[in-house]
Amino acid sequence: MKRIAIDMDEVIADANFRFAEWYTRDHGIEFTHEQLNSKRFSDLLQDDHKYLIKEYVYHDDFFKDLPVMPGCQEVIKDLYDKYEIFITTAAMEFPNSLLPKLDWLGKHFPYISWTNIVFCGDKSIINADYLIDDNVKHFKRFIGQGVLFTASHNHDVVWDVRVNTWDDVRKLLL
Ligand SMILES: [Mg+2]
Image 1 (cartoon, rainbow, N blue to C red):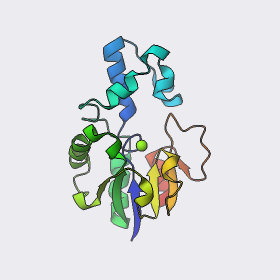
Image 2: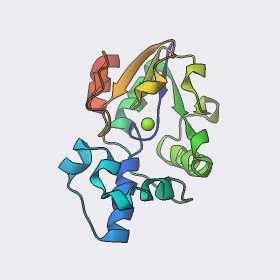
Image 3: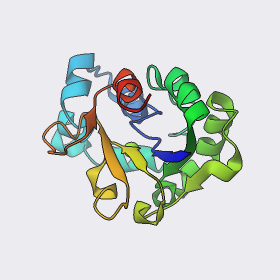
């Protein structure tokens, strides 16, 4: 079986939602879907609020109960029959995310064993045929094919294999 490594934030877990949710809570400002999808979240904020990004992401509750990205549960379930599936997340950057991420995976992807969950830093250590990720930096030294998952921050990035939705992943890999 070929192996697929799948990132979490902005690929299967909607971390952008949490930024928007907390910013609305703290400052009463709501962004439209179009705004959230077109720009990196920090670019939507006024300069003296940009520090909030770090404050939020290092908060213990940031990664708790994030929404699941549309379609990924169905597609990953189908991929699971044909590929070895690994969840690979650079979680070491945010030690506060470790337990919430593990809980989240257990809740939404209960059939993915702990043996196939990789909390890491540099993803070049990952040995897989595909890596689905929203950040091209992880493809630079990756041995397989990087599949760029479109996110608000990567519209301008040039990469040969890009998917916009989980339906695109289905078309590409199933
Ligand atoms: Mg990501």
